Structure formats: C-alpha cells, structure tokens
Image (cartoon, rainbow, N blue to C red; front, side, top):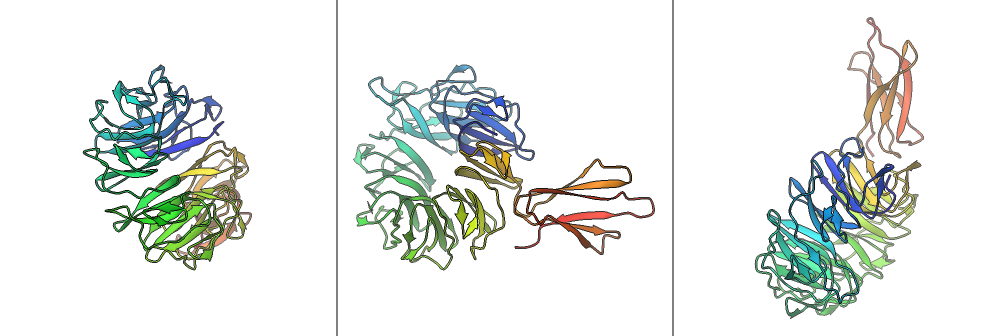
Amino acid sequence: SFNDEVRSLAVAGAHVYLAGAFTFADGNPRAHLAALGRESGALVAWDPRAKSIVNTLAYDGTSLYAGGAFTILGGQQRANLAAVDSTSGQLLDWNPSVTIATNNVAPAQVSTLAMVGQVLYLGGRFTAVNGQSRTNLAAVDAVTGEVKAWAPHSDGPIDASHVTGEVLLVGGSFTNIGGVTRSNLAAVHLETGAVVDWNPSPNGPVYTVTSTSDAVYVGGAFTSIGGRSRSRIAALDRATGASLVWDPSSSGDVRTLLVRGDTIYVGGNFSSIGALFRTNFAALKLRTGLATGWEVNANRPVLTLREDGDTLLAGGEFTILNGLPRNRMAGVDFSSGVDSGWVPNCDAPVRSIAISSSGHFAGGSFTNVTGQAQQGIAAFHPYGRTVMSTIPAAAGSVMIGISGNAGERHVLHLSTNLVDWTAISTNTSGSAKFTRTEPAPTSVLQRFYRASVPAR
C-alpha cells in the first residue's frame, strides 16, 4: 500500500521497481522510490530515498536510472537525475546534474528516459546538464555520466519519447527543435542529434506513440498532423512524417495505443472512432483505419493497455467495461473481446501496467484493491495461475488454501491414484482466495490434490 501515486514501473530481475509521488509504502518510509519482490509482492529493504517526485525509470541490467524533480537522492545532492544499484539501492557516483536557468518560473525536471546501448536519452524541462547548455533534450553516457555532444535543443518541454530504428521520436509542447521548426512531435537521429526530415507538425499535444515497420501511429489532442486534418489519431509515413490515408477520426482524445497483428487497439476519451460508435475503447484495422467488429465499450477513459498472451489488459478511470462492473482494470480477449472474468476492483484510476512471467503489476492513485487496502501499487497472479498451500488445521485433517485472482473460477480436484480426478470444490464467489478442509492422508490411503482455472 502506497500513500500517493505511482508514476512509473520497471520489472527487472527479482524485483519490481516503482517511482512516483509516494512517501510511504506498506507503512514504511519510502520516499518516491521503492522495490517489491517480484514473486512475493513484499516490500524489500531497497530504499534510495529521493527528496521529491520521481517521474520515470530506466534499467540497463545492473543499474536503475531515475528522473524527476528531486534535488537529493540517497542522502546526497542529485539534481533531477540519478543512478542507483538495483540490488543494494546504493547511490552510484554517476552524477550528470540537470538544472534550469534561474529566470525560469517552472522548476527543472526529467520527464522521460530512453536507454539505447550505453547511452541514456532524457527529456523534460531543463536548460543545462552538467553545466553544458542542453534545452529539454540531452544524452549522457550511462557508465561515466559524460554529457554527449548530442544537443537538439527544444524550445518547449519534452513529455514522451519512443525509440524506433535509428531515431528518437519525442513528443511535448514545442515549436522548434534542433533549430528546425517542429510542432509538438519530432524525430531526432540517435547518433548525430540532427532533426530528420520528418515533420508531422501536430497542432496539439501528442500523448502516445507506437510504430510498425510500415508507419508511426500517434494519439493525442490534435486536429491536424502531417499536412492533413486528423482528429486525435493518425498514421504517419516513417520517412517523411506525412499523414497517410489512414484516418479513423476520433471524437475525443486518444491516450494509449497497442499494435497486435493487423489490428491497433485504442484507449482514450471518445464516443466514436473508425466510423463507428465506440466508447473509450476500440480496435481498428491497420490497413483501413476502420473499427472492427470487436466492441468493448468503457464508461470512462481507458489510459493504458498491455498485452498478456491472448489477453488485452486495460487500465484507466472506467467502472464498467463491456457492460460488466470492472473498476479501473480488466482483461479481455484480443480476438473476441470476451471478458476474462478477472476483477481486480481498484477504487481509483490505474495509470500504468507492467507484465512479467510471474505476475502483473498496476500503478495508479487507488487506495483499495479487491476490498483490501492497497495504495498506489498492486500485484496480481497471471491469469489462470493457481497457487496451492497447506494451512494448519485440527488433528486428523488438512486445510488446503487456493490463491489466484478475484473473479477467476478456481477448481480443486481430488485423486487417490493420480489418474482419476474428481472436482470437489469451486470458489463460486469469485474471491481471490478460498480454503477447503479435507481428511489427512494416512499410510493406507493417500490423497492427491490439484487446482485449475477452467478455460474461458
């Protein structure tokens, strides 16, 4: 349970790292940075402590890089950017200070990080890195902290970045970058820092960017981009930045995009998109931009999407999805849109989701999950995974505990020969955990148990 918002998640090794506005985790002081056991979900001793908000994280295999609006981290001065050992939490000597000129009203901050090889690209609101002039965009050596010559100055803050091929796509609120006119979206060469001849020039903010081998897809609050009228969503030519014929035309802001096969899934705050009525959630054909027959409406905005095998996980502000009570987080089938039966039930918005083989993690501004106090961060079993355990019980009996996800139907089976199995109990209430008391095995009669989640 965290006492304030979790803004960024990074799954690495045996841990899940979290950054945000929180100052306590599970009742323990954790100033804006914390780590949980990837398997157990328990808070670990790792505690670097930042003096103020951490916005974003990047990981290179051994070190965790944090960007935000802090001045101290790990008890030492660090101006908005720092690196800590991912195992011990020890602050590293690496120290490329990110600052802003004193005549600026707004304070300096790092909003986005992108790691490419041994180079860390950072965007945000600043005017210098290690005393060298760098306006809102910079690159530093991830090992030495040396500021790279790469310097495509931006006249406005950078809020988002996405690496594709040899370029870094950046989105924000700017009109000029690298001395070239660019409005809110630009592509910068990763090696040279040159602004490439790619100029979509959206007339409003860009919130989300993804790409395929054929196009760059963007969502936001713009109404014009790439030389054409495009309402909040567009596909851009990878070489020129011109808008392609593809034109789903959303009635409201687009907040998140996810490509799978020949379909792009869209979340946001809209009532129509792709020439059909779709409320805040839709699937569009990559070839035509038209909405598919997949119809999963949400009563409030969808803010984040993640892929989990054949299941699409969605987080946001919604309380109803596909006509079912689903509070701020849910899973649906990629092909059919059928609800997974998973019911995390968060009491406030989910803003980020991270996926790992051992579990799923959600970050947001919630304080309660599935009826239990859980603030800012929550962990869930992957769909269909059932954990069994034995619990102390009265003499002559054994209590079997089943743990999974709320909303899933877990079935307990019994066998005496490991060949013939009989279902003996099901958590029909859909709760995350249930128990059953059984006779203890004897030397004459052995009893075997297994648990499963029936196919959806």
